[in-house]
Length: 111
Image 1 (cartoon, helix red, strand yellow):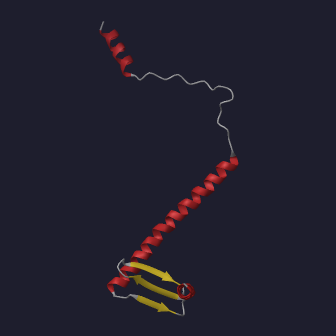
Image 2 (spheres, helix red, strand yellow; image 1 turned 60 degrees about the vertical axis):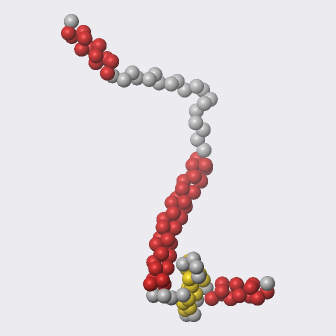
Image 3 (cartoon, helix red, strand yellow; image 1 turned 180 degrees about the vertical axis):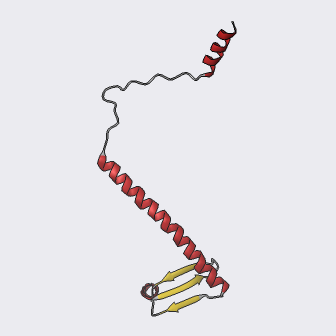
């Protein structure tokens, strides 16, 4: 009597297997190799951009911290074609080329 009770307990503990669903003709997943290739290219480009964005944020924060600590508001380097400045009231650092600043000044003068 005890043996039959154990078997019924064991069968209750095992999860029931779900039946395998039969594939209906015409409902198979369609394979599109061009679409898969394009999606993989996009994913690689997106992941690369995310990696670069993290590096850019780290570099920007280091630049901003250095300028604030050393009380530098504007820095010009003609040899390297750089202008670095902090916008007042925002602690926002901008890095531009001399040509970009020249173009902005001409646009402001024309307006």
